[in-house]
Image 1 (spheres, rainbow, N blue to C red):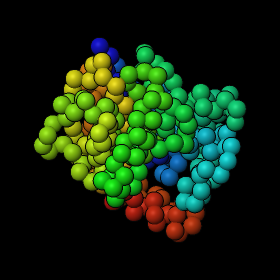
Image 2: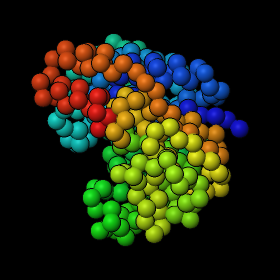
Image 3: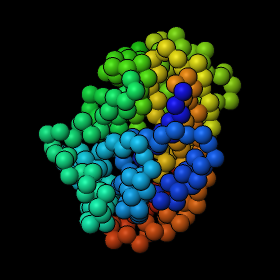
Image 4: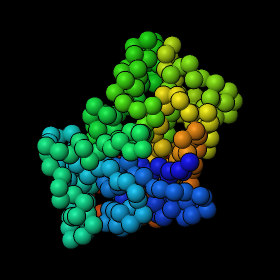
Length: 286
């Protein structure tokens, strides 16, 4: 039974990526699969891209890669756009980058953001909008008031997958989305991020609290976000990735020195506001 290491949203954070890859050396992994957004936000896009290109079996494009090579609207704005303009210059002359993105166009980019592999769906965002749609119930403050409506929203997201197991990124938050009838796979105590987890009459949007292993996934509809390596947004600043082996998923957190990444970001020639927000996110994990 193959064991996959699932990495997403590295966001040019070489310190986080290096520590995750070191952690992976201690584990029995068959393949590394990367769900997009290797670049953007962080200070080392070229170094991260080259390392991922070297070690990954599968690399998807995310919205940050798309914005550089096949932008079809103004979806990326503000801090992210400023950083991407700088990032594009850093990638000039990077052979592996130019080889990878050469065939990508505005017309065909979705096929580079979604891939069916070994009867599983791998996508950066959501199957019907592979670089854009966040798979998320909605604002947490509405979880109780609009429970039925948010539950329906999650059912619709699940219906877009054509395989029983699927993997996505984009939100920067580790997640398991599944049918409510599968509730017994979750431990009752100690593993729930109670602020972000949503429970509806038909769905569960489970966000783990720290390192968590969930088993008995076989023959269930299960859609998993491994979290973000380079810019977590679940309130935990540690790099996050996951290991999957057909019947289980393990969310793993890895310490790294984010102050080194922050110091590099502080020197990037973009607006002070864009630098500051990105720096704060690394420390806050939000």
